[in-house]
Length: 362
Image 1 (tube, one colour):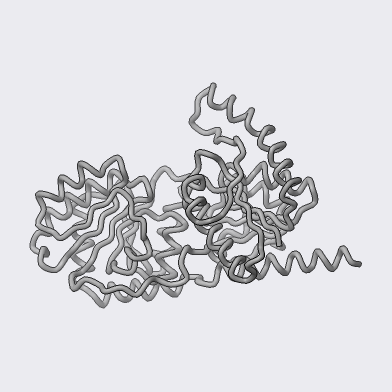
Image 2 (cartoon, helix red, strand yellow; image 1 turned 180 degrees about the horizontal axis):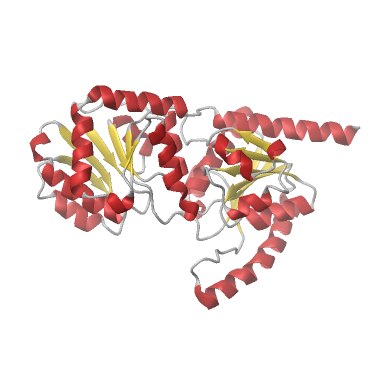
């Protein structure tokens, strides 16, 4: 099989695509896989070390770019479409999977213009505009949530779940202390960083039993690292966590945003979490993700506008002291997880191509 994975830009789009690509390779080592994205997206940094080739197109987003930036972005659309046609002609894919992100749109349009079977993956509960449009062309729409189905042509929708980066968390020796993992995405979350420091000031009485792993993002790293110097807690403070699977394995409680990828990882691995949805996410999708988990008893949520060090300290203390409640949240989260998501998507892609092959023979 020859497969193109188109899209990316953020880890939320790229990492599920990587999980699916690895599953294709696990099934058949001879599968040829090409990722298509942009030079500015996270894919340009991640894919070389993952061993997958990347082709780029000059597509840019239109939002918040001003007049000059918008004109450049508009120019990039037809250029990206014709460059996509060239990539398709050279690679000759059997199937194209759109991951979301700017590169996904023009590439799937180019693919369908050549009669190639296409699918899209929608990670969020409320789909973005691009995927809603592309769903009219796609042969399959793989969603993470049942609630997403009404936004798409129902006959094409398969609720597979959102693929995660790891099949299982590593077996590692855990600390005897209760471990709090804090992160706000690869770039960090400034408000969460500040509120954690404020909360820990109120939790000094837990010093002997609480340790912290804190991913700050590069911008806040120096200031937050210095702030921990005046706190009595055992803490690992990093701008970026390279081995996030190990961090999850060590964590008893997670404090984080509510991106689609993060929520999928929390549920697959049954991790109790306090979710602080990013308030400026498109279509407010992080709040909907967090609300689904909170309604099922699978996480606690604090809205960003309501987040304070005092409120955060209260939540951390309550879960630190009530281990049965902590365990119940983790169990409820695991019930919502779909660990077989990548396998389901690959199964459906093979079935799609088999059906296409049968039609061609007929």
